[in-house]
Length: 115
Length: 117
Image (cartoon, rainbow over all chains, first blue to last red):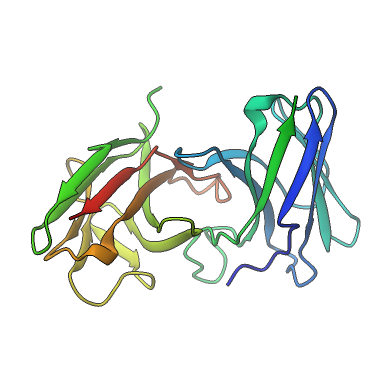
């Protein structure tokens, strides 16, 4: 079962920042937080991941709280093409205790970017 | 660097036929994962393979479904005697194998949409 909780849906105005929250209160010390998105009819697209430090790449920023029980994905300037279902996933690294490294997807957040 | 390639993109089978779905991982990747997405539902893990080995098949139905990832060639997901309930999008993902990149992300293909008539 997924170990994260996300809002079912969110709206964002085009050009504004989209802030997508995720709760993962039972996260373990060796579990990473991953974000993926799925645009209609396409395969999931990797966005970003982190352990405890904030991370930034060309797509987004990931803010992880100090206690690691929640995180926020930030799309700095949302466009219409960012409309998608966004998944927050916690995952054990491959070499830990025989974990099989798979991703378990929950229901995600449907982000609708409005013109 | 080509991404994960899946073919065919669309596959139509009649009930009782066999479906074969192919997945070529990204160059340098030797781990393959298969997921299924039923209409209007989320992605469900099916199986995780490394070259010539099934590592985790906890999400595979017990009957009619099988997967392989041979030493040479693509990974194959085979569904025998398909039924209407098998109609879904099947996604493949790959990741590299290296002791240093133990938390590398999975990269997904754009899926095969199977329709059983």
